[in-house]
Length: 387
Image (cartoon, rainbow, N blue to C red; front, side, top):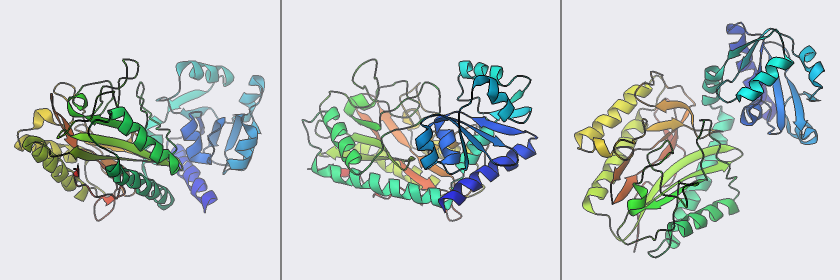
């Protein structure tokens, strides 16, 4: 079954390469190599438009031979020999992730070749999850939900955000969470997720999302800080669960006591927006339409300026694809004139920020189906109140 899974991925890629009249594709980015041949070793993958792929391994060759789901695995050749092993003139590359230095290096190794950007093609292929991938993601969602549910016995006033974050993270690691949150976007980085509370949660920051948090220093300005958890303040835990490489993203709200009426009403609205969007995660739904509907619901409630981040620093989406990376296709954003397809997996995350008070919201990962979004992060969405 596993071999068939990877063979089908190669075949889908080859079909697209043939349509574009490309002779093949070269992959260097580790998670892209992993997607096509099930090993994350340092290697270059050559996929001709027809015929068998070849994996050229730098390190570790032994592990690549043990792990990879393709047959032709070779040690990376001498520079003078590499060109002879790549048959073709017009070659696809993922320009979105290859450094300029590496690009120039392969230009020198492969003279008189034309290189074509296939980033969009590749990300579209990756967005469509097979039944095997969906099972991996369901497992990640179930495991992550376990940890969220367990935190009710730990969170209490007087703990630091950092204490809560560390406890969540160690519980996740103990059940096998891999912890490596891969992101494709340039200059984005994330350590598992974030625990934020009160006014710290409303701070702006570099991270392309609704919540950033203060973090521990200006070198790590994201996530939990040294601030104390206080009674009646919203506490947001927004974390990823990664098992077998597959990421599920979810958020749950906690409070030690009671939320004030405005935060409570905004949380209720966030759930309504999420449920409305989730019901429409069907093949053919337009991503930009879903975003517009969410924004309209926030605007009708008078909370447009609080929606998806602090005013002036708001995230321009309410949902993003997830899988082997946190920022996959599709994106529920205003200019995303893309129709959903069955098998895509999307984290929907409507959130509201209130200066000096905090952030409230919800996030779940869904699979696109004919009946609407299948919820993969299976825990109840209810506010978790701690007495």
